[in-house]
Image 1 (tube, rainbow, N blue to C red):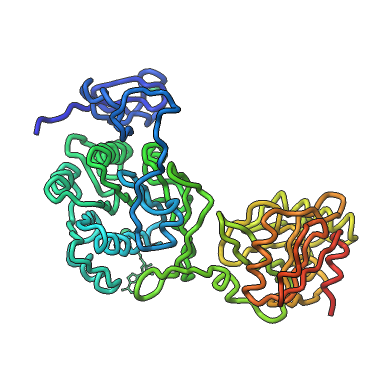
Image 2: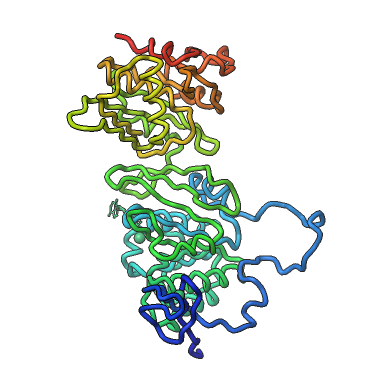
Length: 455
Ligand SMILES: Nc1ncnc2c1ncn2[C@@H]1O[C@H](COP(=O)(O)OP(=O)(O)O)[C@@H](O)[C@H]1O
Ligand SMILES: [Mg+2]
Ligand SMILES: [Zn+2]
């Protein structure tokens, strides 16, 4: 194969040079020169991201029939993808090392292989023997699952042409390299070029691909952010490595919403789908605990119950601390201000810590009331019957409770999980007759809601 020409381009100002420079001659910035392949003009005749070969046509005449999708046989994965895997789509799966990316895609590859035919799993991180051992543990030994340990993108392309698989998985993009580029695997230019190649292969052959990408602790793709723009879908796999459950969420999805999450549990036999996540998030609930209360949030279409914990302790020196994990700090400050001004709770000399158990991040305002009640419970030292009582509601600056959306779903979930009382804003119209075992308690103000925290 003819050697491809490369050049170095300043990522700041676009200055070009045949050789690498530590400092750009154009804008005088340091370390901004990146190697790029000089592409022949004809390569740009058609955008590589286009699947269709059609000419421009009036929008009304275009058939909109949705996308052709594979069932991955993993419901939690289907859900996050927007209802299955779209043919010809390119999906990036990011996550910290050790979180379970290889486990997830190996399980998916075997399941897809048993339904769709040949699947190619390319690993640059493990040998074929290591993959086999893992596959045995995961029971992922489909007849038509092909495995190869390879890092040269051109060789990978040959394998794809020979095998003609229905699905390709790359683990990981940071180990791939194009021999035309002199920079090391994992460098910005290599990662970009390799994804470009994979995109061209996948789109031209209509093969869907999963590409694993490691991220750093801070959640940055170790590689350029530009990858996120190139691919169709970016899935992020997250969780605490010390805990068993993992959450898969879409950061970008050209074929569906980004609000659905998939929940898994890491077990000896691999990732197990959690179809009832509330059960896991409430796993550590005790009968009665100070500063602990259950709230609900809706992720995509699915209601989840989660435990909020508050710890209020006297400030020993200087400014009182306000620490929130899983809850917006501005929201916490607002709630604390309302508790002080409208309820008369003396919090100005108290440190306040808030934690959402299970590492979930609560968005929106439906957990306001729960946060306030948890703070009150911890401050006063009065335990909450957290296994029986859930609280929902947005707190307004006047100390009133405002109605929230998706109330119906959340309350039903609470009933399913065996809760007996649910405190909700009185303004939320709820058909309480449907609930057989759950009492819905409408209240109008924060002060009124706090009356439920008594000995
Ligand atoms: N032999 C094993 N038995 C049980 N669990 C294992 C085994 N090997 C790895 N794991 C689990 O799988 C995790 C690694 O998952 P992996 O899919 O390799 O992560 P990633 O590809 O994201 O780096 C480990 O953190 C561990 O929890
Ligand atoms: Mg891995
Ligand atoms: Zn420059």
